[in-house]
Length: 424
Image (cartoon, rainbow, N blue to C red; front, top):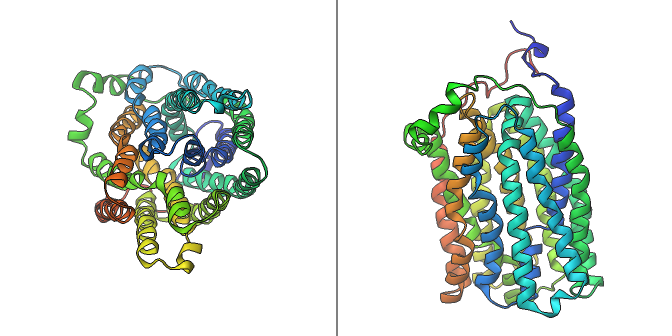
């Protein structure tokens, strides 16, 4: 019977700590530039157009997702992936660019400010998308499945606890400082937190590749889209992920809904960030244990159900018109905190395990490029909102996610997902 030390990759403990530090710092930074609340609220200060507000998620996710298949093609036969992580992560300087532009008075010209902001957002997200393909590949080789759930869960808990303070700070900044100095400071803080994250990435000791020859070359001969046709586990996972991803129809408009319909103050954005972060901490604790004990497919199911709960609650609150439900509106961000924890612990963890040896970049790149088909969803949500109403928007979102949630029941168990006897 093999022992635990023999099963662990080289430099396991070092890489565990390095990846954990990167994960925590990135998570805290994400609290400052939260694309579900902070960024839409910032754009809402410069325009009243719902489609333009929805453009935040479109550019954020489209720039991150769409280039990844090309990146996977470029790096899949390379002996080392770490240089691509460091090159991509250098794009984080864009947060300092946005902050400096706001401090320089760019907000006096709203159209130009929007152009600069969206350009910086696209450059950052695109460069981070390049880094992420290599990052996931190294994660899959450096940290085994069961320990991976432990690392991601611990990282989300620590970053979540730190993010509670960051979310409270966001609310305080928005309440005490005038626009645009408030958002300039928020973006600068995000950039500052990403500095130690980059240092942690630079310290990773990349494990050697296994079976990097014929397997890495085979997708190029047959076309990587053949993965979608030939691998039913990958195909079902992608259908579920895309349907649950329709949550982006509604997410950019929760803040506007709360302010316009329930007359909640702008400072409530900080409360939303805290609610999402606290929920993420609790979800990470629970889902990390679920992933380690029963496997990531159960995390996928829990997260998908939570994703549907958010728009359902917003719909109920709108139709009921209850003041009590209005005060409980942060629940939609609680649901977001749960599904955001489930993306890594569930969907991505499942994906890394169904990818054959040497094919991780191909699977990650293809899956994220396919998800790029959803980049217009937030803008479509804006158009749907302008053409109809909030109840129609929230009802359609909940229905699509509900279908995806049902389909997750068909995901097959992974080998090694259950705990091995005698191993913690």
